[in-house]
Image (tube, rainbow, N blue to C red):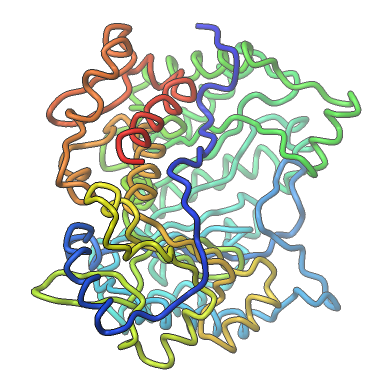
Length: 491
């Protein structure tokens, strides 16, 4: 099936934009009004007491030509180079602070990403896991994932990582031909990558994932099939298949701009993706998310599914992101109302000093439906990007957060739809009701999406909303329409 643009890569769409102004403290009278009105905009304790942790290791040995992630190449005299002991100490400090200033009492998964976290010392993983266990509860069967670069040096460290608690690895193979590896500026070889997969399978049976990039220069459907067949002969658990994206400012982007390299067209990309989906499906791999394929439910990523389901997560380290209900709240009758209150401690006020909230969130003239969607109940946080600035923030405030965006219910459900529709599970009525128990998915979307249902692109029922197998291939075309329906309903 041909399409006009990249159909499987999600581009975040901002909906339900709101005007946000300065921080202000509520009077006791306003506080009482807020308590009454926010009873319509709360999250259940089953939501706010559970979460996951993401730890961002900011360093890489070298920069890949396609990568625009937050990462730094350490040099002895560079201001952004922080010694391991110092970095680990302040990661632990930020983790303690962030957990204590949230309602999270149970952590279901921990993910060490980057950067190249397999360059870190195993002690870093050990300290993080011990901190979680000391501050709250780390589930006994919690998924602990480490991103691994498949060099011989890092492969030799896998046993040590397992000994401190890692039980799942995601290996950045990216390509299985030497020409592509050189073009992408990867620092491993094909034999090293295959050896790493073999060792990982012995240490983490059933919990090994391999990353592969498709749509590389000069790639054909035939060469992709051959590459996938090789991967499948080594890795039988989980494959993440990502389209090569030309990010502005990267070396590969400039090479493409100058004509030095040429990537497949949009239609060729679509063909490559469809061939890969078909081959992986025939090999017993379920596409449980647009870019993720698992051989059985037990091989699916618990941590990533928590993102796609709109659950809480705390991000630790330079450049990390978080989605969390903060502890600047009122609690009454076992229900949490999230407001910035005069009852907050001075420490909380200092920590929340840079936060922004809607001044009209507590305007009593707003109608119930609009009020419901304008109340702030969660925060989206972004840490300072470079290690030196992040470290200073943690020293001063206990947290590396540089930017906080107040999130309303509309923001939360819009994010849930944008990510959840990428999955085979879709948007379930059960999870939707955590955020919006007042109105069902079916009532919002059924009639407005009949044409999508008749075209066999979307399934809408009392149980939820999800894209069909064909619909997943054209999700970028469907998603803006669905988000507009949601926005029109309440704005």
